[in-house]
Length: 283
Figure 1 (tube, rainbow, N blue to C red):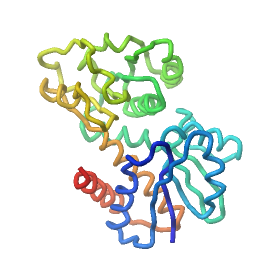
Figure 2: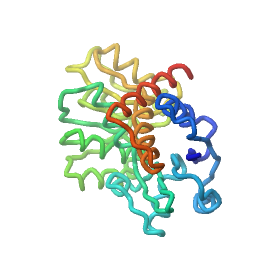
Figure 3: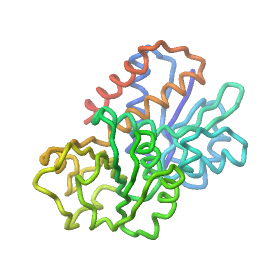
């Protein structure tokens, strides 16, 4: 029985078991098993050693950077996006014990934004400066933007994501979060925790010029609903679950491959549809 799991802390809220179970059902992979484990910071190495039979893991906070450190220590291959961001959210292990680390968050952001804005973007903005912000920068670069503006609470903490954007040859600027002008960019990715904008006097125009898109990576409700505020002004709001689903599809495909399951060309779409329906049913 191929076994997989999501690791992190806290982990009770994770939708990964719901998503992967839906994918298994859609493709008739009845022998696949997916669970969740509470793994705090600093405990990833010991957990992996204690669970040698699992073929793959979805890795969430606070373990994403720790996974990259483990890969370096063990000589595990790391994909380009994980190496660029210093953040891994997927570990796959073959039956021969070989391991590799992936970052599927970038692909998830790219897919979620692409389905909302098929035309080529020129400018991007990122709210926040953490691990997801780094993935957002790489995603915006892959989508073809030429510049990224960062809106953060403490500009001095944005040095790493700014340096990443510059390595990707993007023009950059940094402003305080209160100075962010909504709708001023083709694409905006908010990586802020829910509630970070509550009580901040943002400059909202009555209507947007063009059709700007915002992806809010936070799933929890907040006083300032970016998705609603963009929609009423002629923009497009993309919920974080779209990123979650698309990155989970990429994980699913990697897990199936390491388990030796050959999937046909229609499988990714079937898995994405099943996961989308499962999230909707979950509420």
